[in-house]
Image 1 (cartoon, helix red, strand yellow):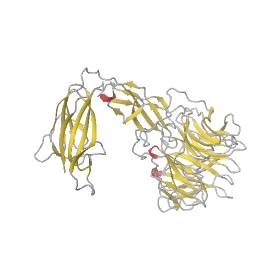
Image 2 (cartoon, rainbow, N blue to C red):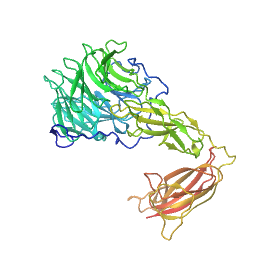
Image 3 (cartoon, rainbow, N blue to C red):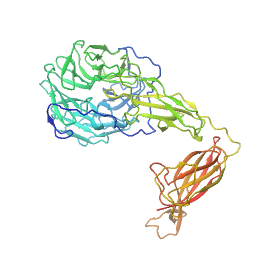
Image 4 (cartoon, rainbow, N blue to C red):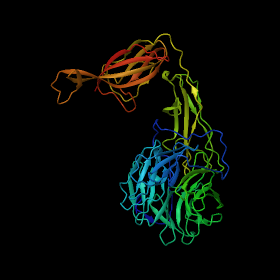
Length: 601
């Protein structure tokens, strides 16, 4: 088996710390954010359970649950028809199924880079799936063998990749890149669970049939070490997860039920006092309170084990047959669980940990609230979980965004309203994520402020003198920028030009670039030149090549322009007409003004 390179079985001499800081580059403004946290909500009492079943099909077979990028929890529905579901911390449930394979059986799910979630689909031949925050699903199977069976966890691990175990045949370890490329690595006898450790290692729980299980540590240096000393006889590790204490914790569902702890050096200790005699242990995860929480489907309970090994189990709600099969921390400070009852009916629930919700105080918009003045998003106050404050730059979907009348319009910690924004409500959001082992994200939204519309003018805006520093110029690389000084024209065509215009009042200025292209007459139309019409009569086509808008002040305005209409789009060399219009707060528009120019090569 080769994970990073040649794999050796040896003692580990050094470690490489796992970094989750390189997980993408941004969030699309269209992301639908849900599950915002209420400010001032007290911590739920330890052991208090609330269950939800509304909007769930009668038979759902819920298998996995994980925190999502916007404060909600995401879960898998393995029944037919299968689905990926989302539940907000307020209990609102949505399901998504478009993109799943026929007869899919989604099993486990986890948070991944770029705001997406990833899940295993155990339906043979198995697949790995990705779902975006907006609910778009894609499944991948290229790279998986025909006998693959992904009845297992999937976790975010080293190098921003997703890792899973394949229980088909003798088993293997699989890696999925964020782009969907799957690679499997050799035989790894009977793997059943996988976790990313705090120092960049992967930890794999094994359960050979008829033999005592073991736990294997694989370092980024490709050194594998197998540990079994300390496990009960005939141990059957079924799930493993990192804890806030720097150790790995696992559930042992062998004849002697236990919760186990393994240190980075491989020292194993098992705890069983406090477990039910009919326990069936299926999952474990770190909680915001610093303890580990697990699902006990046999005892119909959610359990907690402290870092010193004290176990307490809390019986779930009114359905006596319901058993939790998966647990995950939530942004409200609780631990959430999913599972099903003896009749196949499913329930989602949360249990209080005593930890406070993530959001302590909402962000605040700071500034004058006036058009043309920069506003600043003053950060929210966040609870300290596991001794750490969350980060607004940890995952790709984190950071700040601005809302106008509830719709996202910009990212970043600062925003300057334009004249067109007058009369709308402005708010900012901050999204943060707690570092591993939690990887819980939370969203705080500021109170809205009203952007006052400038007082309406009794007359429509008027564009006075309009001109340009050069009518023939070469393209540059800089974005358009407001400038107080013009650009002198040397003998050689300059790089870019400077457009000048004067306004009688504050107004939104719109620049529309019309490109003039060669064409051929086809009937009463002027069409692009093709091999079929090249001999027809020549004509000139005019197409819209781009547009720019900015807030213009009363008086002279100058815009330095080098041909770029956005960070990704530029005007090609050719002949153009620039159409300038201005619109005031009363939606009154000026008469257009035209300027002509040529971009040379």
